[in-house]
Length: 363
Image: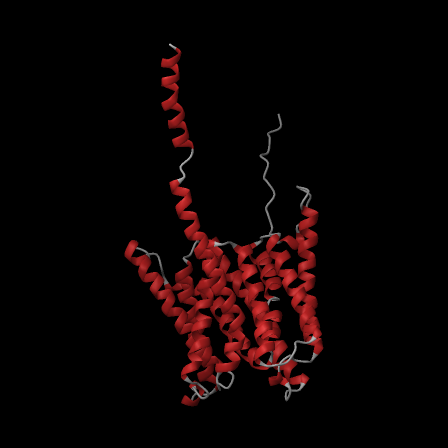
């Protein structure tokens, strides 16, 4: 009898183990996505760190920054159209609900802000050192949080001072410090007046301030405003990311073309003076930046995306010091530490909504 009972229990235990644990499925798929996430992080670090260096090397003498932005938007449009075509194969009715009125309503204003922002970025890259640009450009995190709070009514951790758990004071302190660090780094670099590379030795501090620092700071504000509007379109109105990207590219390019033709109706406004075949290198790099950000966010998470950008900042500083054969200034070292620390705090302590407790009816 005991042997019979023991014989009956053996299959039951084996069956329970086989149903409770399935080693083949989780052991094969996660490593592949994890590897792709790490490769995406590496590619994003390289793209982010090399982008200002590539712009100064191969697009520093172009005559029209607007033409540069239009070509970049055209490359992004090609990538977005490819993504849309893939979705149309699996879902033929993908574009059935699209209409021009809603498209202009949700993507028209963000496209204009992104277009102006990108032109200002091109101007700033020509008047700032690569590391200065990458550091000050991170102030867009502040404006993104501010505009998301006001437009989407979504709190960010700077104002998360409620005591629904023990971590709230810590989160509030860390993110308040992160915001203050970004502001301090921007003020330190804008007040320093001394570049780190030899290319700025013949440029006055006034030109660098008004043609370098001011454009990148205004671009950061526009970036935060455009990001909040785009997030409103994607999340609140449930619009597709590839479709929104294509709309932003088309409307932004048309806005720049109309502005150029109004200022100078002649064909000289669409000048490609200063372009070479190598100018396409920063163009393609800029176009792929958005794809890399999306890949890292999807396969590695938002925190790891910040780590990739931190690695890109370090890469920019090292390459700038080597290529220009000039040591970085103390202001740049201090600002780099402030920006890196602020990005770490900002991404490590995101806002978490407090748990909602059901209301009990009073008898």
